[in-house]
Length: 511
Image 1 (cartoon, one colour):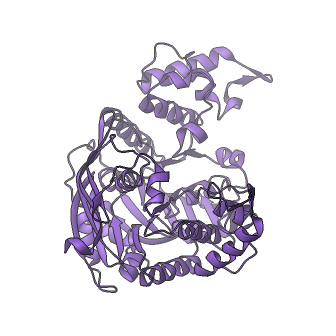
Image 2 (spheres, helix red, strand yellow):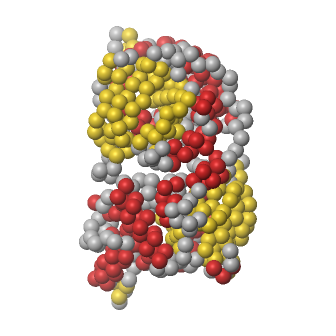
Image 3 (cartoon, helix red, strand yellow):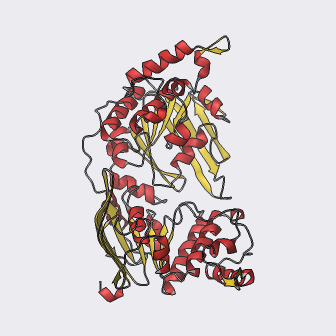
């Protein structure tokens, strides 16, 4: 690439957090007036790299150089990078819902006249800016009354009001419906035609294929490759290989599966997003799980795995729009979490701190909390039974604590996860949904949890394992379903599966 055609060069970027090298000697070159896609699995380091660029991680907290418009820059904060014409649109939108579009666009950048805000001028300019992103709505509308797609366009409008030269979009379509996604991609092409350079972080290969001029793949904090592409002619296999190309070490205990009869069956399950009208997070999902079987669910961030599982567990998420559940051949209506538990379902959530634990409780209270009836005699809790149950799980799951009276916050992540597992095993479920059960846990604790999952399957339980780590699914599951944008796109025996085949079904609908 010719140096004068580059708007940005990041050279040898290394960023460490305590005990983790998030970025290791990453290089990125972006040509002026192009759309540059950055792809990689969850946790590869894509967002960290953009935070280094935009000054969220200021100069001095990372190693390496950033050359922007031909000069080295040393941003201390976001304000400095914005002043230089770099704007980042995060996955989580950053506007204030209770304020109007105009107030959000000019916040911290107000137009003043004789010491007062010139509202008429701000409103006039907001109209103009909104037109640039194809929005013709009243600038006085409060942000909270807009759909997610419109909010995203307002964020981009705000960036354009600051004379942006380089626009970074982090997973821009993960929360949008199909029409809004298409609208956003078209807008990116329009901005490119006006000379604005875009960096798009995405793992949706169809979007990358539609609009990208260049692709950079990051894996485990390293740049794997970077090359120009022709719109519509993206080699998806090459990107997939670069995203996942690592060997699977022997990190999973040996296990022989003995599946029995189907005990959990879901048919044509449809759920609408509670916040985005018309956006379906589950589209006619159908699958089954046998007794003694571990069934994996693979999908990238935003694919709808957690939404599906939470909606099955007592309609805990979204707006139910149709579908049936059968347990042991009998149709059941699980309209509440309580009903789901009574029908033998258990759900270990992805977000253990917010959804799995009450952080004010002791280990003892937490373990019995999902089935208090079990230790109730004549309407009173039997505290001896409570303590006995907690002690049993402390020993059998090797929870590292001197005392079950200790608060759950005193435990490490791996031990907290064991407490959440104990809580649900105490309910003696037939069907156990495990959503990212080893996220944020060290390798030793992972191995123990894997052995526990095998033990549950050997006891004849139907286990559903949701994981973002493909090696984990290949190492643990007997069968794997893939999900993309709320649709189940494939079902494969894990003995016949590989990472590239799964990644293909996780990034492309028609396959």
